Length: 594
Ligand code: F6R
Image (cartoon, rainbow, N blue to C red; front, side, top):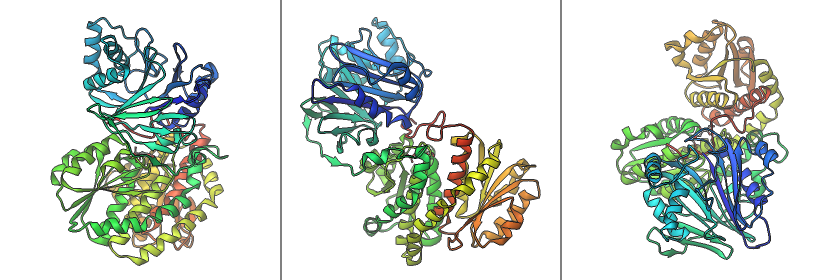
C-alpha cells in the first residue's frame, strides 16, 4: 500500500538519488503503479512516472539526480488512476515543497475545496496533494517546515506516513505518521526514513520507531524527534538482525520461489521461540476463550489455530476477520485472549481491531516484522522468524505463523508428542522441495484451467483455502477452497468435465470421508490432483495426478507440510502463464488502508 523512503547524507558532495533508488526498489512489493523521487540541489528536482520501477527507470534514469537529500515513493493507487500526475512526490504550486505519503487522507475533498477557495490550484486526483498545499499555506503564514507539517496534520483525518522537503528550508527532511508504518534508520553515512526495514537494511540497522503524532527531523547532523506536544524526546534505538542479503533474490528468478525454498529454515527458527511462548502462557491465567483476528493468509493460519486449540486444549476459540471484528467486540472480556496474526504487523483492519480488544482483553500478536505497530501495541508478542518476505504472496511467513500457533497450542495443552512432531517438520518440508520437478510438470498440464477447486477436511480445510488463495492471487485463475464435506451442499453443481480439483488428503481420521468426496468429484468428470501420503495406494487408482508426501506426516501436522506443494503449483502455473508472481496486479504486500 505505497512505500516511502527518505535519506539525507552526511557528505554534502555525494548524490543521494542512487541510494534513494536502491531503497525504494526494495519496497516495490508495497506498490507498483508508479514511482517517483524528489531531491534538492538549490531547487527541488522531481522524476516520476506511471509504471513498474524498471520501466520508469529505463525512461528516466532515476539515480541520475543531483543533491544529497531527498524522498521517494512507490504507489498503490487509492485516489486517482495510476498516472504521472498522480504519482508522488506531490508538490505545492511553486514546487517549493515535495511530499511522499502512504495512507489515505479521508477528508481530502473538504480540505481541497477549502484550499481552492483560498486560491490554490490542484493538478492531481490524489488525496495526498492537499498536504504540500497545506504545508505551503502554513509556511506562507510564517511557520517553519516542522511546524507547518504539525499544523497540517492537525487537519488530516485518516492514515498517513508523510515525508516532506522544502526549498524554503533546505537540508532537512521532516516526517510524521499515524496508522501507517514509518521507521527511521541511523546509518554511518546518513539518516533514513522508510515504510519497512528491507528498504534500508543495506545502509542502517539501528532503528527508531516514531509513534503517532511525533515529528521527526532529519538533517546531516542527526535525527531529532518531537512528541505531539512539541517537546524533544529521546527514542529507544533498536537493532534489526535481518541482513541485506535476506532482502535479495540471491540467484532465484523470483522472491516467491526463494521464500518457498526457505520454509524449512523459517520453521526451524520459529520453533526456537518455545521458551518465550511458554513464558507468555505462564502469565495467562483464567483463560476461558481465545479469539484469533487476522486477514487473508494470516486468517487461514488462524483457522488451523482454532482446530488445534479446541481439540487439544479444549478452549473455545473463534476466528474473526479483522475487517468484520466490530460485531464481536462486545463479546470480549478479561478472560478472553485475542490473538492477532499478521506478517506485516501493520494491517490497518487488524490494528483497528487491536485497539478495541486492548480495552477489554489480553492481546497477543504473532507477527513477523519486528518493531511493527502490532508488536508495539499488543500486550504479548511472539515474533515469527521467517526473515523479510518480499514476494506479495505470503509463503514462508504462513508456515512460520503456523509453527508459532502449533507451539502455543502444544505448550498450552502440554502435548509433548506434538512438540516432538514439530521438530521433524523442517525435514518433511525439505523432502517436498526435493520433488519440485514433479510439481513443475503438473503445472504444465493444468495451466489452461479457468477454475480450480481445493478440498480438504478438518486440519486440511484451511490448507485448501490457502492453496486456493495462492492460486487466485498470483495466477488470476479462479480458485475456490472448500471444506470437502460442504461440496455436496451447493458447489458440487460447478464440477464438470475437466475441472481440476486439488484434494488435500493426508492419512488420518478424515481420510476415508475425504476419499468419498474425491470419488464424488471424479465421477462428475473432474481431474483430481491428490496430495496424500506416499503409501496411499488408493490414490494411484483414483486420482488423475498424485503428489506423494512422507507417510509419517500425520493429519495434525499436515498443514505445515501439505501447503508447500500447493504454493509451488501456484508459482509454476503463474510463471508459465507469463505473470510476475512477486507483484500480482492490484495487490500490495502491506495493507495499510481499511
Ligand atoms: C496473501 C497475503 C495476504 C495477507 C493479508 C494480511 O498471500 O499475503 O492475504 O495475508 O493481507 O496481511 P498481514 O499478515 O500482514 O496482516
